[in-house]
Image (cartoon, rainbow, N blue to C red):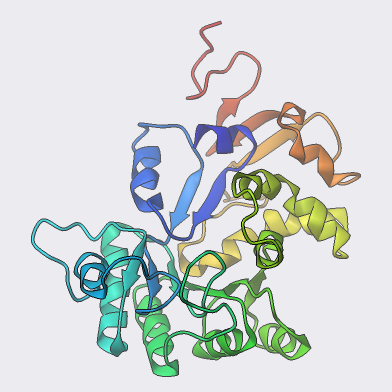
Length: 299
């Protein structure tokens, strides 16, 4: 968390994992970090991207099933298995109860999971619609993990707010995404992993620092790439969106100070040394003489 904030990220989404719990620690001041808009567990079908194929199905359902929450069980795993519309709604409610500020559904197979295929759609149209409807009723947007065309089309038609990866999208998919006003969160790492299975996974996290550079390589201007990472970010979480990403009256004072001009070259943001000041909520968390919690530095 601290390192993310020191690199200038004042707000992030966490789409599956323990972000809800970490977010509470940040909000309570136990750790210094960005504002975290977490989804809790990703919602998966059995034999889907969020299944654990190495374990017996009964064990998976007992521990991850939306309909199998036991006494003393916090339902805090990184994935939640649901079948049918009722369980899909229950899965959404479990994440909201956990503190989720958005919802993630796995609408296609994945790259790193065994036993499923990234080109196959997952969940029926009615199940996907139930996830989206329940999330909206509770004021949450839905992010859909998708790779292949069938999953992309199904997710967009169900009304998700964002499509994540969409690595195998064709022109028809992109036209549908644009027509429906869905936010496309492109992840270059996903397509590279499709081509290079077995690659060194830690590299994926390091390469996130190059996302703006890749956006420029794909055709955006430097300013458009910066806007995509700042002003456009809150669009992904709709009603839960922070008033941030822009410098204007009434917005949170979340901004950074840099030693070089990223509008001239976005690559300057890849070097942490260029990010000299970080403010979050009007409080200085990085700068000369400032410690990691915004307190005066010890030395």
